[in-house]
Image 1 (cartoon, rainbow over the protein chains, first blue to last red):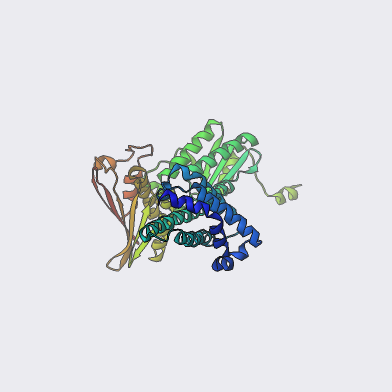
Image 2 (cartoon, each protein chain N blue to C red):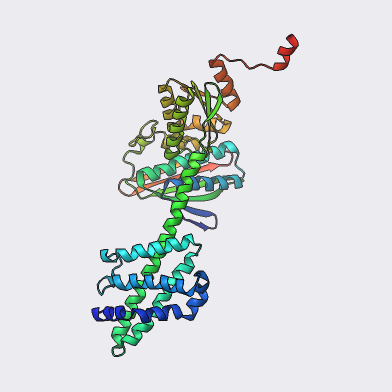
Length: 288
Length: 139
């Protein structure tokens, strides 16, 4: 596309805008999305200005050109704000694509003499607007991915609560897979919990861990070692029969740590260490 | 992560950490479907976990092909792990307990072999590694 055409398009900005906002489809599809016709016109004018100001004869075929960054940023911002208002990605993309019709119509009126030039320019503008649409989609998806990653972090936090079971005993049930990131959270929370509650025994319950492979075992061993450095004892509970068999076949040696089948037996072991006794109250009374 | 199902075969790609878990869950579903007991299920998914993670760590990812196979009346799950990684220089050494070129415990390959019924490993340095395992329902 020649510089003359770009300049001509910039000079005809108002015509393009009128063409754009007056498109029947546009008013049908998007009229309802904006509070008023003025809103639609204001928004469209901003986007069109961003497009025409940043588009040059050189960068129209190269979306990654550095001088297009303001436009990309504007489109990303527009997509995000529309997504927050509840527009679907289809609505935003169709809105952006509808600019193409307006641009091409005015382009057709500007280039009347040279069909070859018109064809070439049409193709270039078409591709350019398609790319802007893709940017909008990418922004939308990135936004969604951020939400998902945020939720994953939140879940990791939520699913590793430190519970004070008794004076000097804390427990942490682990639900789900123990990967490296998870182990980090578990270890931090548990060590912090031991220091804060001045506990001497920590029970790590792995009833909710679906499989113990060598990586999980390695993480468990590291956690136990860290707890011992604080001078506390660690009991791993919730080892199911199938997990026990698998760990033995896998060839992992967990014999150096205290392991129990249930949380109850781990608690009993902890009471034993703290020299506490749990008795039925009834007998006590009858003795009196 | 994408999956393609072709009759009995299903292909899963391992490219991220989370794919290992998705793959493991999928294989567990297959194992449950053929009526595999809880102990063998756990052994199988633990072996899958080791091998899939190996692919991810040492080869940057690869493909897992899951298939239900039969030996007479007994059914089993056959899984092929294919990667185009650097390959294993000395398979005999890699199959030893405690040998690792990474930071892990070195139990992955030998441990996985003990957990499944059949285990076959082929590797060409510079081309990649293919591991085939079968776990029979009662094996």
